[in-house]
Length: 120
Image (cartoon, rainbow, N blue to C red; front, side, top):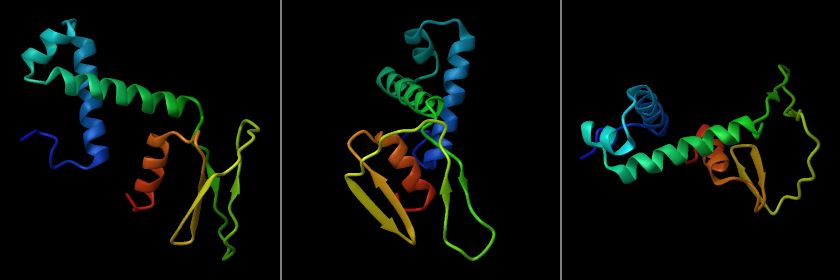
């Protein structure tokens, strides 16, 4: 049984971010750090790559802020820093929310969005 088995996705992410910070501060080789902390090297590599992907997605501005009006209208305006040609290939509607994706939509982004709306 792993220490992270009963954690939520967000708790698990935060835990591994701390592990990566400890590794960076340790001046140990990856192998020595994993041995010293009883971490499976494959698990360490998975999280190192996963966190790098998530950070890269965030840096690329894939998330944009939505302005939600205070009145009763259901209109939401989307503001993006870049003009992007987006051709949706699949639409997901859930609880009044419509999510449009295509083959270029990063799976970590879709996973995050679905987690935020309580669907995944």
